[in-house]
Image 1 (cartoon, rainbow, N blue to C red):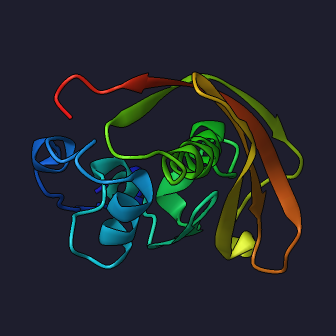
Image 2: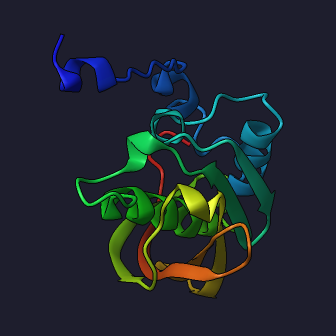
Length: 170
């Protein structure tokens, strides 16, 4: 056996059919839907399982996502891949917008402006990504997200513009 084969690790995870949750979008407010996910009444989206997110905290206009750093987040440089960090920032910002929407209204991200401040490693511990609303109108919303390590040090931040629209099936 080669050294690489001996060092190989594996990871498995499971998720619920996302179509079932998607079919419910727009039938309740965004806040109610996110609270149902937090409380286990609706399954978390597969992306949260993929990146290893463990918990969400939800209130209107504010969503926090928690994720412990793991080896499978690493890039070849020995730090967490920027795509994982951007995914956390996008999730917190987008869900924050979702938390403000009434039944029958959906959203999609138009952009995500991301700034990486410090390298993220296993030593960063439990990551806390906090999203908040900057502004929300009838057609667009702007949210921000800040990513902190378990000691409260800022690691990255982002701003997201989202398009709001009526859902056809709501």
